[in-house]
Image 1 (tube, rainbow, N blue to C red):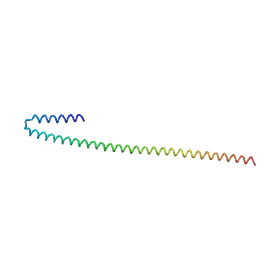
Image 2: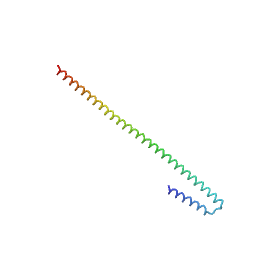
Image 3: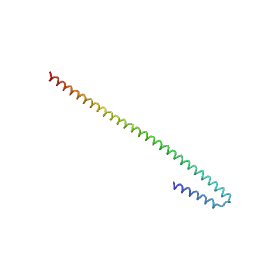
Image 4: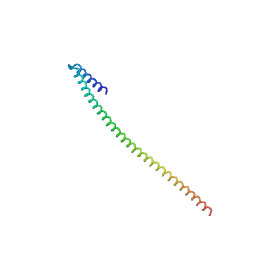
Length: 122
């Protein structure tokens, strides 16, 4: 950015020196300076508009990329959440199954104990 500014300053300085040293009347010189200033101002406005347009385009591209990354992160989050939930559910079902097996084993043991007691009593 600095080199562009220096370049433009050099061009403007050269034009002004050239106009001031040219063999013209004062009115012609003033008119020429006004014309050149208007021309340069128009050029600078065009460059400014191009720069603004480029910044806007870059901003839109950045927004698009951020939205893409956000969507991708949400997808991965949901995938990991589902996997964790599934693993949690499996552990829960496994624990319930093991509790039920233990309960049935205790009931079977009690049944065997009761059966042995009734055989001994008879």
